[in-house]
Image 1 (cartoon, rainbow, N blue to C red):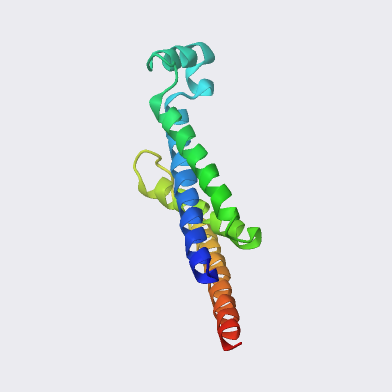
Image 2: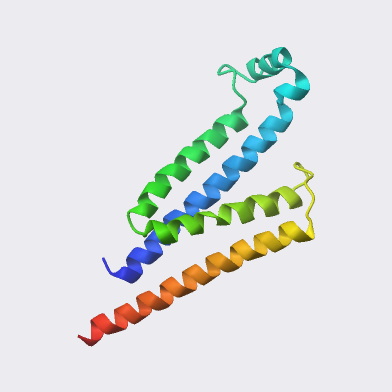
Length: 148
């Protein structure tokens, strides 16, 4: 498999892992807003869990756990194609996705602040720099290999 093809295949796995982990975190947050044991009380909380169906677990929590499991499986495939020094920083895009969703979606009612926006921008910039550097390095290596 060529380096370029391996890189693009690895990127698909990292992107899928990041999206699944982000969606799972958002679902976890949503479910815990509904079933917060500190707010509703532990006894009421377990009654709410039991009232959700035969499993006794809210289906959104099960969905979140499933997405998290898919994220981990995809992450394992990504690590087989990427150096961890590149793959792991790409996973930090999950912070960006969760922040944007939490501030834009009405379910979470979280506020944006200039400092948080600057932090998200720095994460995005850093990941962009890593990807750009990796692509240009691979392009140079590809040209050297084809010149031989």
